[in-house]
Length: 311
Image (cartoon, rainbow, N blue to C red; front, top):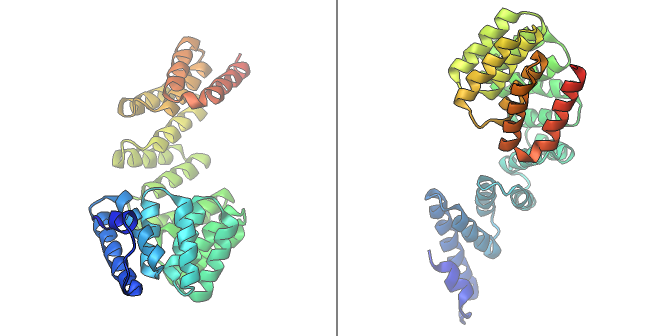
């Protein structure tokens, strides 16, 4: 893998430069692929960057974009995918990848525009409709998102993520019956879906079906003992019932597995404060700040608010 230094560390030679560029491009591209396969992503990126400087052909642009994504370089990935869609405007995978990057950057307006271009290429593709729905939800257009998700499911009635997102939106619209129907469809396809079980537990809890909610949440925790949201939801149900001891026990159980989780200390401290145990509340507050010093002002402010409300 010494081509980079030979290309940019020495002087140019006479001869057929076009032929040499083509040869160098091929070497760089496949050196990059080998480096990527070996997990050497930094070197792979350098190879791909040098390769596309010689020839920005679509496949190598795609390889470079994927390498950027693997290293969390979203803006570089987006710029590369934009180059790719200009180079090959019929590349549906590139449009979908670009839409996904826009989603991660929370740029829903651009994501929506990208999805419209993808729909123009293929209006029978379930993933295109799903991505369009995510953009619509980001733009607070929930009804449009539901319509688009329904279209996705017409194309693929086994599309679990589409059912999950539609259930989430329907529940936000307080359409519990319809949301539960989508959740049940997910659980038929994937009985141990943690997302579906947790959302079902949230709905049951909100509807007052406490035992069903706790049963579902316990199933989530049995599948994944490190499921933070599961413990938080379970403790929250006990808190709504004013059963402070069970809420505290739930947080303590979670801390035995996630001892450095600031949020768990913060929430348990809040329950101690509601219970009137200011000493233990202060100890948990201190530990939460030690674990997450960046949020000290927020954590302290929340505790002061709780204390003011509860005397």
